[in-house]
Length: 352
Image (cartoon, rainbow, N blue to C red; front, side, top):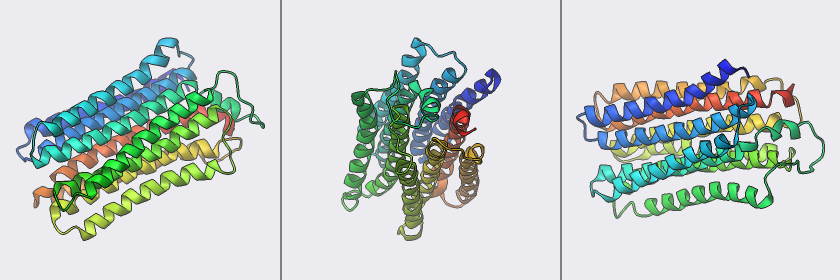
């Protein structure tokens, strides 16, 4: 990877973060629809995901271009964790300081997004020793390389992701179990389901990276298990979205299904990273340089779906939120394109 391309791949997450922040602020302060109190904060929180993805991109790129140092090793993951803490505090405060339906839904969603930011930041932390992956991929044994994570460190990194996913799923089912008592729990619960699917997908990614760095990755089993898990999470989110669209009794609930479809696209984008690491581990895969196209396709899906929903919002206000949130999800998918491209460049030697 040359220096110019490295700048481009680091600029993409920052550009998408600025888009989410700018668009979220515009929706929040320039719209007259009350739904702005949901769409605006959620878009702003999606920008924090892009910030965390920047920390991951920069962590890997600086190793590939040999500009990585002790400061970057700690500062880049810390940036992601700080973004996660700020996002959770903002979501919790937004939810706790008002009894309105919009604040209840937006607060829960923003808190759920903070779980994703933590998982991505943990991915950045796991990637601090990324250069061991192509080295291990050239070996035939499973001896632990010098400088890899210890067992306790590996368990901690994977455990952080598992904790975030578990918290998301528990919160999801708690909300869905209280739908009859408080109707907004239906919206918040289903969206949190999609966010929990993303957290679970990121657990698969963290596990793949950690185990390949430790040279304990089993290509016969794990190369199938982790990609299938991510694809399953994407399908659960997408199919749940389709189910909500087709069966919800009112339009205000049905439109949430489109957001779930968009969250499913994010899972599919993450799957490209897990699949790339799997197919280039100790073998040659001729189409490895085509895998970064997956998040491009998912980004286009979100873009086109958002365009249709914008048109539908002209006749029904319920489409206001999904039309804008899915545009932000498209930005995240495009950001994941840069991450997958970086991984492809970093694993090129092992797939050559």
